[in-house]
Structures are given as C-alpha cells and as structure tokens.
Length: 147
Image (cartoon, rainbow, N blue to C red; front, side, top):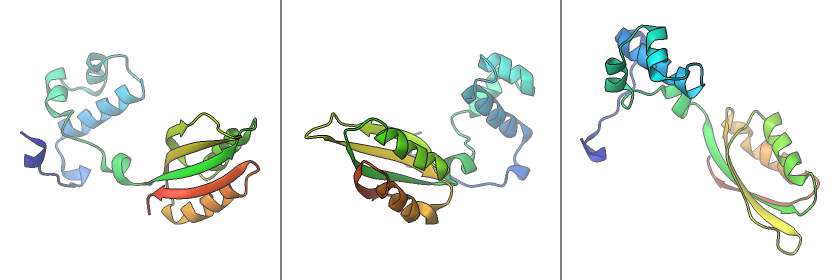
C-alpha cells in the first residue's frame, strides 16, 4: 500500500480490540527500554510476536503524536559560556520538550541556534519567546514555525 493509499482514522481506545491496545503497550515499553526485546515485551503483555509485528507500524497513540504544539525558534546568541545553558533552562522552565537543537560555529562573537521543541500550552509560546529574549547573551529571538 502506498503512502497516498493510506487512510487514517481516530478511534476511541475503548472500542479497540485488546490486541491493538497491547501492541501500543509493547511499543511504549520498547521505546522506554522497559524491555530489552520485542519478545520479552510481548510476553509481558500477553500477545504473540506475530500479532505485534502485524500491527506495530499501523497503530500510534494520538496523544503522543499530536497533543502538543511543535515550534521552531531561531536564536542569535553571544559566544559566552552559559548562554545556551540559560536558554535551555528557560525552555525547561516552560515545560518545553526539546526535540532538536542546531548550533552554528560562532562568527564575529555570535552563533545562530535553532531549537525545535514541543510545548504543552501553545498559548504560552509568545511569553516564552519574550523570556528567551530577556536572557543575558541572547541577541535575537524569532519564532520560525508553529502557531
């Protein structure tokens, strides 16, 4: 089946067959390294490996994939010790989950940093950007993507 032929639906977990819910549990266990192998995880939840492999690439937890907003911020930072650490501290204080961080080599005493993060409260992104801009060593902040 090609990517264009796929159909996606959102279904309340309460109406799903138990094997689907157990497949999601196995995926979570493997992602969190709660079990070392799919065999062990399948055994722990009580499904066969064949059932897990049949469904694993077709079921996802909506909440994990879509509940929070994802934002990318451009920052221009002074090349000083602790500036990036302060930015990360501010993001952590806002309950932002950093997904990617890219930093260029400093040129003329400043480095460009882009940070992509997941934020539980999308309404607070403007407040977060303002807080980042007030940090010592932050020259510029721009929201590149997100709402």
